[in-house]
Image (cartoon, rainbow, N blue to C red; front, top):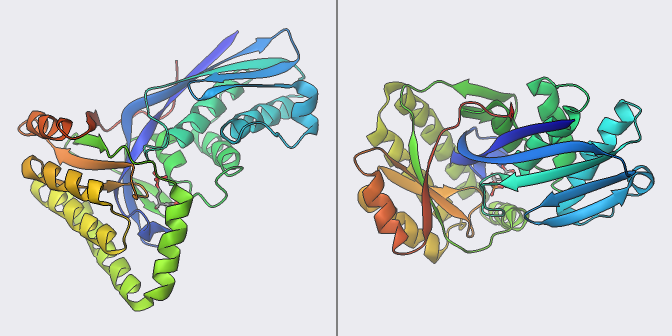
Length: 317
Ligand code: PMV
């Protein structure tokens, strides 16, 4: 028996970094997916194959060790361990992970992988509800990212456009318009934890200034919700660019990102960093009238591709 599931990556449209200090964020899942296929093995081993490498553990070391596999694989072994314990089974399992999402550039690949693997492994026994699936995927991902907010995991499992409140969870946002986005990769490797730590140090040194930035971000998020309701792309794009100005002021932009944002703004409605910054990707808002021009423009500098909002979230295949 095989159990197969896939889950989407995400972009943050508004509120990264400020969300860590209580401001709401707007994010959406995108039509780039990670899929996971699980099956029982005759051998008493857990084997994982993915584009980032392969790893295996015997069932005994799965239960007895601290999962000393490579860092990237740890959450997946944890998901298997939990499922086997819950169902009192000691069978081997193989998981194959395939991805359309480049890793480590802020498009939510690790959350999407945790959601897809949780659905696929548990699907060998029973299909979990989305809330239960999110809970387990967050638990697994926190083994390696202890302080992650859970926003990426929620949007990957539920799909769509979402307002994320770090204090009370998320709310789906309904939009009349199917947003068209263009992602451009700065090709600068970024480390989310390192940049979050840098921003914390910046906040501690510039307390009042940072509080002002949080207030401005809060306003931007409120106005963005209105723009979505009115289907006002000009306003939505302008607010994305305003949000980028704040991100620049807290020093998470780079020269390359500034260049990409400037170029994207020539043809699109607006552009900004998506995710932690310090490299990674930018996202720009387009529609049919300016999508090709924006892609052609950005392609001269870097890798870029169009994405749309995914409304399905996790799904069994
Ligand atoms: O780079 P990403 O996609 O992992 O996004 C990080 C978003 C932050 O707001 C910087 C951190 C967080 O936990 O929300």
